[in-house]
Length: 290
Image 1 (cartoon, helix red, strand yellow):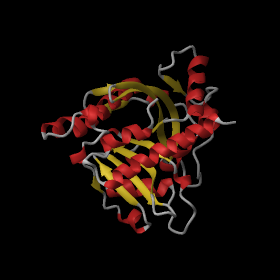
Image 2: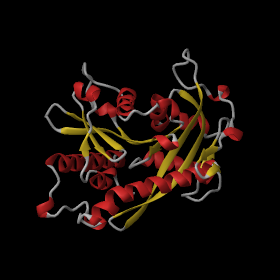
Image 3: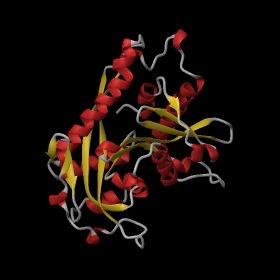
């Protein structure tokens, strides 16, 4: 699987700096590229560290957490958690979070999570990239509730979780193809104010019959909706990073991560890329050692 560091340069071509005043007041820097926001903080050495990468697709009732590692920021008076950062980003984009029903979390360079998903598929006799739907009462349900991906999703969505879909999306970078596992968390009902966390497995009502989504093309099943989302987000990335900009003479996709000498990105973007690459290498080394 290609690491996040390999994908980052694609999204950082000609981004804009978001005016997220709350986040800036707390010392964070926000970089925006299309529908994706990158949140950075400066560590004790004055180096930029990536905390969160979030995309909002409000017309489809979707938010995507591409990356979240807020624990890396030391505790200090101005520190904000993922929930506060997520809410601030949504507010800056004038997004009504009540309309967000799906929180999608990407699994990137996480061997333990990848193995867990593989075991779920094997237990159901499915291929290594086949779609899986997990409902309350399924044996995998509580185990998914223990993952950091559910925790992240529950932190940013106050409604009750009704279903989880696991899919693998094909990606391509520099002519290299790979599959990325993705959790789709569907939140269908409001949790009462007295419930600080999503309801337990026994309290969740199976609403499978209600999980029909509607857009301009009519009613869609969840699987069809997920495929439609994948197609739309890929087309959006393609339009932002390939279509119009190639017409303006920007470098072709295969060379986007290797900037020409006369077309160097601002130093901060190269710094972020190097930083993530180093973090990923360190994570890989740690996971390989007992």
